Amino acid sequence: MMQRDECFRALARHLREEIVIAVYSSAFDWLELAPRALNYFSFGAMGIAASHGLGLALGRPDRRVIVLDGDGSLLMNLGTLVTIGAAAPKNLIHFVCRNGTYEANGGHPIPNPAVDFNGLAGAAGYRHLHEFSALADFEARIPALLAQEGPVFATLHIEKGALSPQFDYRRLDDPARRTAFKAALLSL
Amino acid sequence: MMKRDECFRILARHIADEIVIASYSGAVEWNELNPRALNYFSIGAMGLGSSHGLGLALGRPDKRIVVLDGDGSLLMNLGSLVTIAAAAPKNLVHFVCQNGTYEANGGHPIPNPKVDFAGMARAAGYAHCHEISELASFEQQIGHVLGEEGPVFATLHVERSRPLTYNYTDLYASARRRTLKAALIPDA
Amino acid sequence: MDAPASVKDQAKVELHGGAILAAIKASGIKFILSVPDIVTSAGLLRPISRDPDFRLVRVCKEDECIGIASGLSYCDQRALILIQYTGFLDSLNAIRAVAVEYKQPICMMVGLLGHEPERPPTQSGRYGVRIIEPILDAMGIEHHLISQDADVAKIKPAIDKAYTQSLPVALLIGRRPVAP
Image (cartoon, rainbow over all chains, first blue to last red; front, side, top):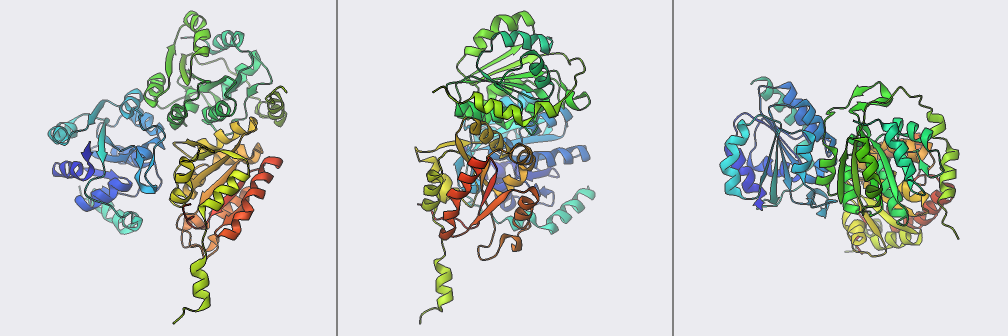
């Protein structure tokens, strides 16, 4: 089990101009740990973050797109795995931060905490599958992951780390943030 | 590769008082081959067949519930695989007829015609998963599959069917729902 | 110095989860179909998850609840769907077909996240909350606002009516219920 904030710090150390989409508790952690113009938080409805990711990946095949999804979120839109498997964007990496709970609304368990996300992604047609439970292992393999031909799927076994995000959605929904994101994207 | 109507003919020989749920082209063919009171067609929204099936399985643990799903339909509600696995109804058998096509609305391909549905059901947590491509194999296994402790999943690899006439007014008639409800009243 | 009476009265307005759960049980509901909702998470879902009188079915997406409730109703089993307004919106097509057009007794308890309890939902500062009642009206679905303890008395008659007449109903939760 990894601490989410340590996981994200490790990932952030290796990023330069990748597009990052994050949801709920991942978003609030990421916002604090890695504030960047190319962060995208406007997923709007639970479950469609990876769909936004697909759109961005298709729209900018020259950029790597990283989705920091949640397990409860992903379960809301499992069809997206098949859509992404079919569209087969080479530049998409889809992480699922797996802690077996809906952190954003009370810490209730997801329907089947034993669900095999990698199995689902593999059956859907993702090109590479990974699973990480140990921080050192994850940190060591990030560069290879970022260079791999996608779509790549990686389960991160995490628990809430040192950060206790306040769920202030105004910080995610901020239209100024979307404007800045678009400008940053155009300038690449 | 099998023909769906041939599969259904074999299946019909093994169906007594199970509740059978079917949608779209599967419903048209099943209704032709085996019209009966315990057929459930009023699914309403594409993809919801497996959810209706779960409700019936939970509501009547004394009856076996057979879902004849379509691949395009199931893709719309992949989360139901996880929900069903979590609820773990012993009396549910979930077939998907995979022909890679949306037959009911123009014969277009589904996003990933080769998606591994049995793999997804396994990853979701179904108790038993099967994949059948040969009619002789289906004939040999069907009795066993129907009797396994559920939830059971089986992919039936079938060809696109002949052109069908969709009489939705008939399939979704309220009289059918009344008949079904009456047929479900337990014997005194 | 005492606070003015109106402020004291406002401070006393509450909605008790225990009362809601008792009303749900009195309505013959055995199955709760749910995706966690911030509004009712502590006051309803958590106690439900520990209550052997209920069978809780956790679903991945809210529209599954519409199908499950329908299947259960054929078996003469009563179910209550417990979701957030966002999930209600996500399920509109399933509600349109199964609840309204097929006239199934689909009972939905919907948390109005962000709703200010002292205002009618149609005047909420939240767009998503403002549109809920007009959508229910446009669909011809009966709905009741449960914002304080006095409203709890609406629950059992609404559910009973839904099942005897085979029609949908929405019970909108306008304030976080206090956990029992």
